[in-house]
Length: 639
Image (cartoon, rainbow, N blue to C red; front, side, top):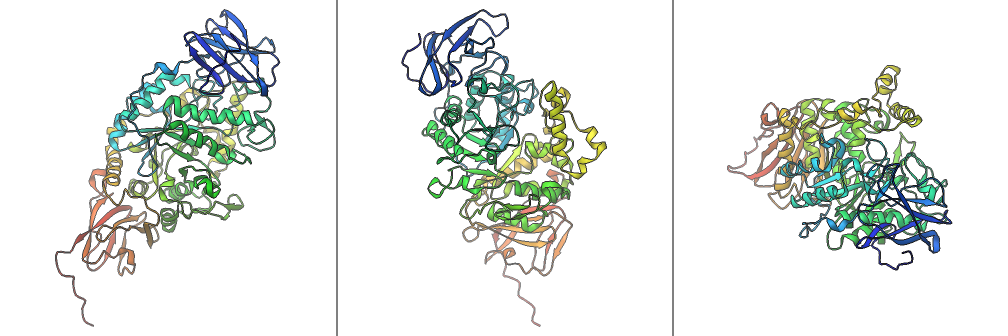
């Protein structure tokens, strides 16, 4: 039944076009003849039938074949003995090396028609790895925990990559079937049910997508075309994708369609784009901007958010296209993380070299987002960053943990285990109340003791290559470079290493003070009219001591807020010649919240200020608000 003219939703892949009829389309300029191989099952002994597709201009092949949802198929190029999965497969039930499966997305009944989507201001992000979030490692199991995340105030799930990859476990950044939700976590409809349930609870879900490389195993794109990749650009993880060279239009179409697909067929609320600095594209329209615009178009009236990871801190990504930007909404802020880790642990190694963890860095992060905006950066021996002026504070995603940074220690220890309880409570308060958009990494909210290290189920020569590569990467930290500690590093391919990373939800009760701390901070941020407001130029700050500072959140008269932070020893300010500490006229400061509360394991509240001095307890954060004076102001003594 080749030659049937159909209206497809996406330019590539297998799409049902009627009862028992599926239309196939694939870009395969290396092929002179291309056939769909229908299989009775994904097993090696399956019965097979062969159905040729018709060539089109530009190297495409297409045609309609009698095949229904659930049918297994592969492609055969030039009558070769080997069969290969569809590059745009919607599901790989037995992994990337086996048969593709026809999927009918219309069978799922969505109930989120009233969901309007999300916008960047006011969000609390939560990064999740589905395979380790719940013990079962499935979307169904993870969905059972969503109500609790919504209860504590999380608003957006940021799901680590789910494009199918080989093996039984992995981070997801080695995906090779970019349209196929990973079979390890369930079926495509299980993923739809997860998103649908999240929306019913008021939670958005954004997807971490990897458009800078594909994994080293199970990637069959070169069977169909040599033009997917290019050697004109360098890439830290493998061959660079060809987004701007000869024959790049179908490659761009593949990735732009992928963005549309996740939004349209799974109702995701946006993306986090991985390592955009390695997406090299000199086209008139940068690929990530093109994907973002296609995704917004696919979302229709539903609002989505687009966030980039970008190591060189190129703020053009979040500027409007009319100003030469790419129309994204947010950027991960590594500067804030690095300063926080130095302040918490006193480590100044490797990429922490250029950070002091001092008060001024946190003040500057609150006011300007990135710390490095074009200044010299010793670690890379080059300038780092672009100016952030004119970019709102909500665009900067702040965190003290994420999947990379927790794993970039010898044994994947959580930050709460690397510092003192008081200092950790203090930094948590800064993270959750700062003007940026805060993000938590799974389990951070209850002080998870489970580690998170790099894991990847690979075999053969690749297993040793991954182990050695990981060891070399961690050796940039002198404290991990020694021979003895190198011998102790976890083997990424060991299933027990993966299993140890699974969260233990019983720690919500075991570590109740930390859980209460996060709950109360999110509630305070959400309910306090000034703290939830993210306005440009709305915060100023001042250094009070070697490890202490104040942030002042300006509002209308009588509505300012102070966030006082002391990451060091107790400090008495007498005198206190800092204007930001002065209350609005006719008011005095009163403590609204403090990390020293016994509810969080603290020593108890101390009055911070009176008519004579300020007293800052060690390792403490507090929020102050103005209340009207009830007595005349004390008059100065005559001298």
